[in-house]
Image (cartoon, rainbow, N blue to C red; front, side, top):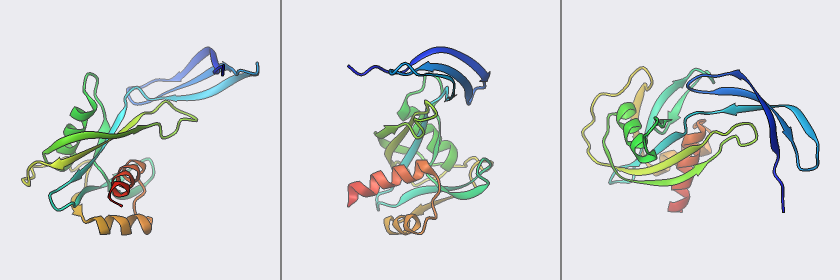
Length: 179
């Protein structure tokens, strides 16, 4: 039977609503002890949403990301609020960030993007456009909202024009299903 590493103690270095940093003392199955294993703890899970219309165009938003210093095209995404389901969070994020209502939501995939250093969990939701009527959206977070054809998205990926991991995972899952 495979044993798992065992947490012997934890010291919290930093805590916030968004991210926590801990150092754990961990004993591995072979008896080796790591005195300070750094752990990024994410209190909220995240959701990214792949929205398509009746013509199979894909909804993207153009945003500036302070942490990377880059502008780029992304799928709508954000945190899942306490008590909110993955699907509810996905609907809310699309409405807030693009102004569109969506329908027929389904969870495509859940994953840990950096499981060697954090417990972060991200979910990708697929849905369809419910109404072509667009209301106002958060212009502090999103600069532009645009529909792209499948071919345009494939070309953007080939040309390395999409840098957001959430968008890349969601788009590649969706495009792979279409192949």
